[in-house]
Amino acid sequence: MKIAIAGASGRAGSCITAELASRGHSVTAIARNPERIARHTNVTAVAGDANDRAALAKLWAGHDAAVSSIHFTASDAETLIGAARDSGVARYLVVGGAGSLEVAPGVRLVTTPNFPPQYKAEAEKGAAFLDRLRQEKELNWTFLSPSVLFDSGSRTGRFRLGKDQLLVDSAGKSWISFEDFAVAMADEIERPAHLRARFTVGY
Image (cartoon, rainbow, N blue to C red):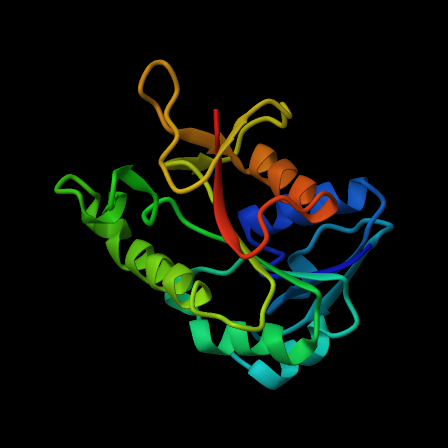
């Protein structure tokens, strides 16, 4: 497949790029500073601005899927969603956040009293992005939320998938590595199972 990734030089974006390339897909890796993107036979690094709707739509056009791996506080939902719609891509996938996941029916993690204040703005914008996607009538979107702890680790290929509820392990920990998150994203691109829906991944 031909897949374009905006934010490909970031931690999640770079892992998704590497995972897709290793599976033989042709990846257009888009970043403000494309020189930061690791070289790979199946990766074409290009410069792009996620806040320029027309330019991003042009870069995404002609691909089977477009992936957005950009911080919500550094981007605009209407610009990204509009670019995906304008590009004509068959699928638009978003690297989401954990803050919009539910810890109880109707209770999002970001609204709980002990949610870290330094992450609240990003989490609230991520939740608003998801809400905006759910209103979208044209786009075939998928929003993948990580677990609470989202950091570099190992690619194990062993994890659980959920929908709107936060996943925790037997010790009460909610976590996933960037590497395994990338596996879940690549699996979804190859074998669509969450069309026009959000899902989550965790150990």
